[in-house]
Image (tube, rainbow, N blue to C red; front, top):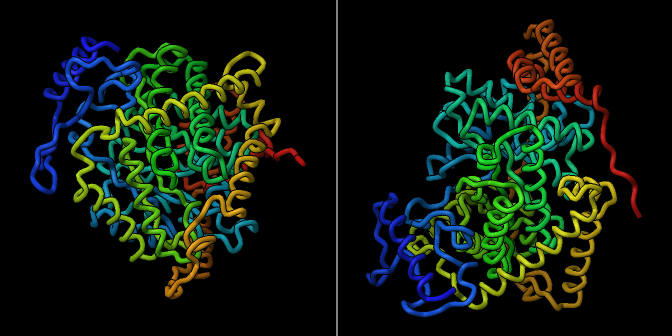
Length: 557
């Protein structure tokens, strides 16, 4: 790009920056020096390839979605939390919000993630252990008791039974008296990554995609601010993928959901802004920053060139980040505070829109109140003390970061081409479904994990406290343990709830839901009615399993 084009871009950026709202804050260094809101090539200098870097708030958004960067608004502190029963988790949420958290992120226990009730025999010993137990809309009421859902953005990390859980959330909001059309938040719903990495599905892919399409239509029509899909790379990375695999598989899944929306006749400019993303922030600092920058650029280009998006918001890739759980160590766990801080800083320098920081004890158990507070304070120190919010994309133009960004982008494009080749019609969706069926994704992730493990065992890669600097004076941590009483009480409450509800109304609602499943009717209204009647999660999911069957992964060797 020649000097005149660069200068014209700077002028465009300046006009947009001047017109945008900025926070009332001190944008100087610790020593009092004034810093500019963005930096670029000196005046009169030609910079080959600068069109790929550009200015904040301009296509291809390598440097961020907004001309102001974090001067306009900082990222949302969205701490992932959930354990025990709804009342216990509600208390943790109120602590997070009172301590400065900007939104909520719900962690569900394993029975809920698998669409089972707490009194299901397969739930034994798991109720409330890795998240909160939710059996019906009444639990959702307790979970968000005293928290205004109309004013609080809420993310829910669940995919297989995401749609019935979402309906229970809507019922809880209705019972608060909220205007449902004004709700704002994110539902994960991303079933592709379940088959690729996490393995928490209920049905075969096609029925899941049917439900997701219904949800996309419903939210576009009834709850325009709510994001019905958070396409997740986090679990792909935690399963052992490389950074480029995480990026490519995640964006390919996103393209698949775009194709789903288009197949429903939805306008890409209207539904694409409702897609958000969820990435892992791993420990290789610069590689992670490059990954986030490349993600925005790739998404914007493909949405424009392949799927015909024309509105700016349809081209935006908004993403939440969580620091890497897989990087945490049981050995010398206090070191995890350092790892989390470095990973969080990478996410911030990469321009994340919201962030969860892991607690130091999460490799051993659910976080204690103290470790959860340290994780929250980690973000607040970055936000309030380090000056990283003062300049948009401060590493833009770094030879190393730009080379890494280009390299990861090129690797991702090679993977996209291979996914399209897998399909029968050249679409990304067909390639993803074939890749799932053939075990292509899982085999590639397993190979990447194996290569890394070999490097660890050969001491080519080093982890402090594990295969380097193993001596320590640290004492064992006290960890949070969920009492067996949680399961006993949850099962007792669920039994009482079943006994007191109108069973005729529940059966009628479930029958209407199945009738809708057999036609082209949108299933959300009938499922919502089942939730209002206090049908349990297990009852809703079992009814659908009876209609659609259960998916079992083919055996592979």
